[in-house]
Amino acid sequence: MRILKCAILSIFVFAGVLSVTFQNGVKSQETPTAGQHDDSVRQARFRHSGRMDVEDGRNPDAINNQGRDDPTEAPAGFDNLTNGFNEQGPPFDTINDENVVALRSFNDNRFIFEEFETIEDGLGPTYNAQSCRECHQNVVTGGASQIAEHRTGRTDGGIFFESLGGSLVQSRATHANIVERVAFGDDIRTFRISTNTLGDGFVEAIANETLMGIRDRQPQNMRGTALMVPVFEGNGNARLGRFGWKNQHASLESFSADAYLNEMGITSPFLPEENTSGGRDVSRYDTVADPEDDGVDLVAFANFIRSTKVPDRGPINATVRSGESLFRQVGCATCHTSSITTAPSGTVINGG
Image 1 (cartoon, rainbow, N blue to C red):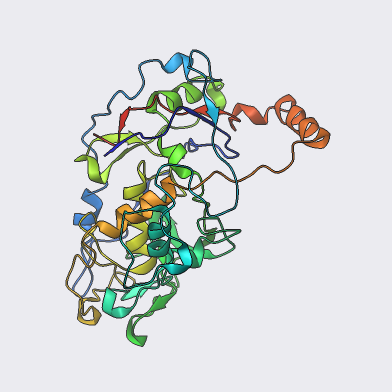
Image 2: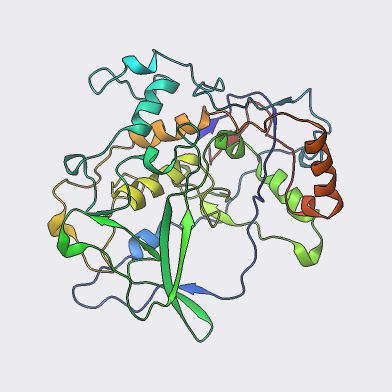
């Protein structure tokens, strides 16, 4: 639910924004029995209305900057400075728990993004980290890192089943009785590294039609799947997914709500139910009433990300230009689009 404040910007992306098609289905494991948790309410939140708003009627001109009024390249750098979405605010080293003001500035929102959560704040009962910064800090706050998560499940008859309680196995807990462990039968196990969030505000500002145009220009046998996903703050309206390992979110507020719950165990108005421990209810270990956050932190996280600069490419020299030419020649650019222009300034996104 955000009116774009940025000018039309050309951004460089180095990974595809459209997911690959998988033929196998993905399902949860058996219906919960006594002592297990029914996750159907949360699953319902990931169903959309089927409505997807028009965000840019000039879609054919959105690729390669054609037909736009002097688009400029997105600000880049690893300097902890705002891209202009929010003002910089008071000096970062003067902000503390007593004087921080959520949503006031880039530095205030960065402080909240870096803030360590405690059990009294609602941390856990199962969780992976105490702060967004624990996983997103390289070279500056918001970057990617080597921190990895454990995903598990199993297959039966060619269908993938998530582990009970979901495919994500949280690595920490607030009590020894609820530390999650991988079930013996869940023999599909993999790790996922923490993704970059720097510059993701520009990715959020790409119109649905632009992403569809990228997909439609790909050869039929290489074409990705454009996933329609619900926008939590958009009353169930659909938008094309672009955040998360499976493009399961389209807005940064939805993405932040997911991370707050799954990484820190903190519930919010968008996701007010606690996670489980391998499918087992953990409410007896939860001392803070749900939702544990009133939603302000989610917007602070999202606005911090929206205000970050895109990663700096570094010096553009002859070697880089040669590599760029080779990148196109061998066909990498078929899936990895080098330049995308955001929707026009003033466009309403995320369901209005």
